[in-house]
Structure formats: structure tokens, C-alpha cells
Length: 377
Ligand code: SDX
Figure 1 (spheres, rainbow, N blue to C red):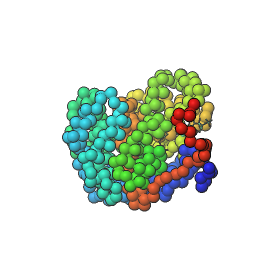
Figure 2: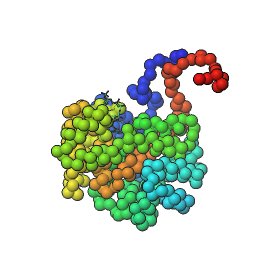
Figure 3: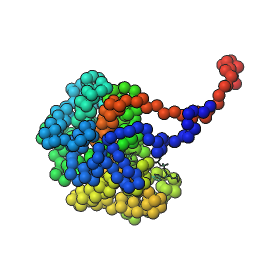
Figure 4: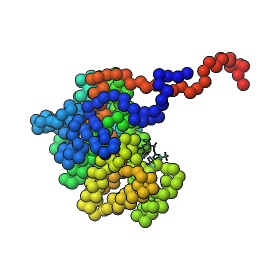
């Protein structure tokens, strides 16, 4: 039995599934562009609020539009009291990505207007982007015995995320490095979690269902979960003199070295280039270059042994660790940024909807005779 095309592209590798104006990745040259703007320019000059606006509307905001969005995101941070109760009832030992996936799904129960497919979803996009730091903060503060969240309208999105998780106001450098990390993680074309969101939206399902699909997909260690595992590897290595031994042993066991390789980039991920420099800067400022020095050595060994380049996840964990963010919140921080991209892609899907439904090449048997259960052995 054959389908229309016998050519199976496992993992849909190199398959172009749709047209999009949102993000361009040049895997050969190592370039990343959001709606026409190079990620290096955005990382150097923009902020997360402006980048989210760019992804949602396809253009950079005027100062009034930026101020309106920033004010709106501040207002939308508040958790409904029923959500506070639900989050507080979750086990303190729960995996934060499970908490996030559950909370996003439950939030739809209280916000029917924003969840309907179509133009009203821009409200849902802003709501989910604004509220994810509050969900994470509410959960982490309770499990860590920290005081309850305050609204903090004075804080930007990045500042509020750090305040929500750490219960302190970040320094200017800390706020800047997290803002850059949020810009870098905001979108990345049809990565697995964004594709999951678009598949969900393509059935005309709602925005909250699409983001719930995306959160569950991002959790995997081959995708958003890699940043936490990079840090586990650094803990295992311990000192620079053990890098060669530990990395080579992993490679000899055909293990994947987390933070390396990419389906699209065949050279260095431009986000890794930027995060490497911020990891050095924040490490220098805090007098702790331990992670940075280990990672530089890991890079050297992995490139020599496998010819692989670092991806966005290699240095992000070291930046988050130096900010004081617990490792099991690294992927949730990734989600708190990528929700801007997920929702931008859902909005784009609604504007030019086409059910996403690939095919499989059937390799099982055909025409088997049915045998009644009494006659089966
Ligand atoms: C993200 O898609 C996106 O855009 C994702 C992302 C985004 O912003 O959304 O960029 C974020 O998910 C970054 C990737 C984070 N994951 C990791 O760091 C996990 C480690 N990386 C690998 O698992 C792997 O590189 C993938 C999953 C990222 C890509 O895998 P592919 O394209 O399916 O490639 P592959 O697994 O088929 O590997 C091809 C070859 C193999 O060699 P052989 O077995 O054929 O000899 O390269 C080797 C692999 O063994 N290889 C690695 C490796 N990555 C590839 N070997 C050791 N360590 C690795 N990390």
C-alpha cells in the first residue's frame, strides 16, 4: 500500500510545511531574523516588550505603541484568585513545566473571550505572555516559602520575571542580561513546540489549547529541556581537568551532549554566540567564571571530537544560574519568552488557515483474514 509520496522525511527534516513572515533562519550562515530584523540588532538594541510587539504585529512599535503594550502587559500579569488557589494546591514537588502546562490549560476556564480563535486571540497572546511569570512566581514562591507576589507595575517584563522568581529587584545588569535572553528565545520558526502550537491552531482549536500543546512539547530534553541538562553535565564534570574525560565517555556511549547540534544550524547558533558573551560578562561581574570556563572547554572537546557547534541551550543555563534562578525553572523561563513566538504563529495560522495533516508511509500488513477470538492461539 503506497501513499502519494513514497519519500519519508523522518522528523519532517528539511520539509517546508508553510509560508511565514515571522522568522527566518539561515542555517548555513548562522543568521536569525524576526520579521526582517537581525537577532544581533534586536539583542543589542531592543527589549522583550518591543520584540513581542514585532512578532505579533510584524513591525516595530512607535514609542506610544510600545508604552501602551508595556502598560497592558503589566495589567495582564494579575492571576485570577481561583488560579492562585489552584497553583497553591499543586504539589510543591511538581515539575515546574507540568505546573505551567496545567495552569495555562486551566486559565482558559476563566477567560473564554481570549480563548476563541481569531483576532480576539491577540488579547489572549498578550494575556499569556504577561501572566506566565506570575504563574511561575506564584508556584516557586510557595514551594520556597517566599512572600506572595506583588503587582510591581514599576518593573519591565524581564525585571518582573526576576522579581517573581527571586523576590528581589534585579540589578541593571541582571535585568539587561535576562531581557537579552528573552529576546533571543522569543521565536525560532517551526521548532517542535511552535509547530505543535500551529498544528493545534490549524484545526481551529483555541489559543490556550495551542499554547498548552507547545508547553508540553518544549519540556523535552531534545528541545527546551536541554538547558537544565547542560547544567547537570557541568555538575557531573566539576572541574576543567575532567571535561575531556567526561565528554569523551559520553560520546563513546553515543550520548547526546546537551547544548550542541541543531536540526537547522550547520554552523554556530547566533544566539549561542551572544549568550556566550553575556555568560562571561555576568560571570565576571559576579566574580564567578566557573561555568563559563567549563563550557569553553566543553565546546573545544565536542567540536574537536564531533565537529558540532553550540546551540542556544549551551550558555543559557549558566546565565540563569548566575542570576540565581533554580535549574528546574530554566525551561519555564524559556517558555516565558517563547510564548510570544508561539502566539504569533497561532495568530498567523488563524489569518491563513490550512489544516496541518502530513501522511505516513504504511509498512504494516494488509488483507489479513479476521479470526474469531475463540480460534486465536
Ligand atoms: C532547541 O528546532 C529549533 O529551532 C529548536 C531551538 C529553538 O529555539 O526552538 O533551537 C531550541 O531545541 C535547541 C536544541 C536543544 N537540544 C539539545 O541541545 C539536545 C542535544 N542535541 C541533539 O539531540 C540534536 O543535535 C538535535 C535534537 C538538536 C538535532 O538533532 P537532529 O537534527 O535530529 O540530528 P541527529 O540527532 O540525527 O544527529 C545527527 C548526527 C548524529 O550522528 P550519527 O549518530 O549519525 O553518527 O549528529 C550527532 C548524532 O549522533 N549529534 C550529536 C549531537 N547532536 C547531533 N552527537 C552528540 N551530541 C549531540 N548533541
